[in-house]
Image (cartoon, rainbow, N blue to C red; front, top):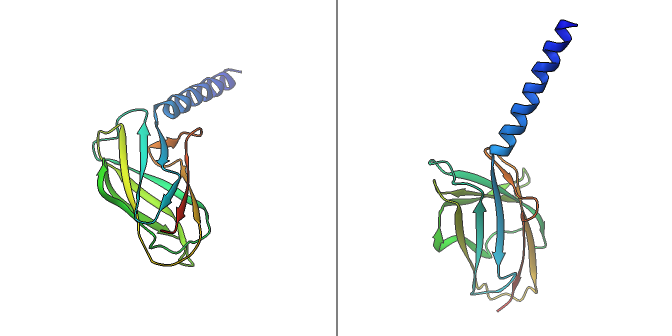
Length: 156
């Protein structure tokens, strides 16, 4: 009986510790405006955090969960005017198609803005839509209420 109480007590401490650590994680949300962007215009992605990022910064992952044109080149991400963003880069699937994007937020920020310019390509393509979903990662969890960006690119 005594051994069972120690194990149960230890398990209780482990559960309490795990819950405490989950509550300590940064919560990150993302939004974007406008939802429809014409070639030649800019859009902004806003990342909000429940507490400041670590001084070395924080990398967050956005998976490309829907895209009717998975080839890169329509948008210049992290364009001039971005604030609190140190880097952004696509991640790729083994077949070479885009899997998503890694965005690195600067240290000690509670909000960051990434400006993205939609490039004029001179092609008539019709509306191109994409959905990016912020996913949980090392040192943070995605806000389940605001973790998705839906955007539509329109020809000029």
